[in-house]
Image (tube, rainbow, N blue to C red; front, side, top):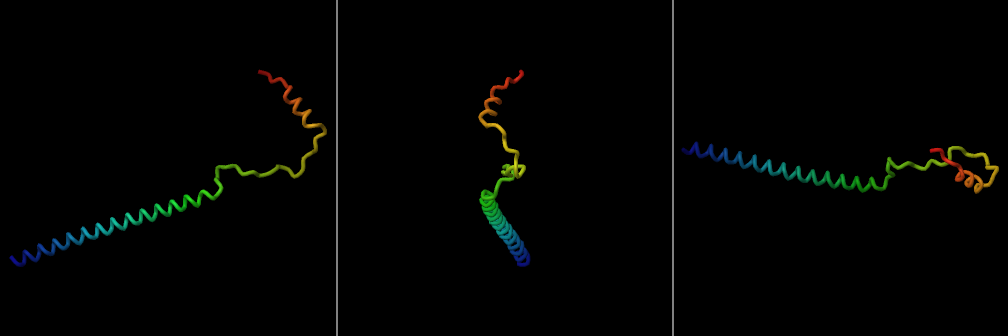
Length: 87
């Protein structure tokens, strides 16, 4: 009987140890998830300061110098607005 009681105590201790290990693992996983989330949040906040890849950047004029206009810009605009567009 004493031997059977000792075995029972051993099995009970093994079960308690496995429960304890599972609890420690779960707590560690939760902590790792929180740390990963805070890292992701800090990465997102740093990303706001970087220019967006989808925004077109102003590249400036295509050529260094252009041929100057020989007429007044107002005359060009008047002529452009007076054009009839075929439908």
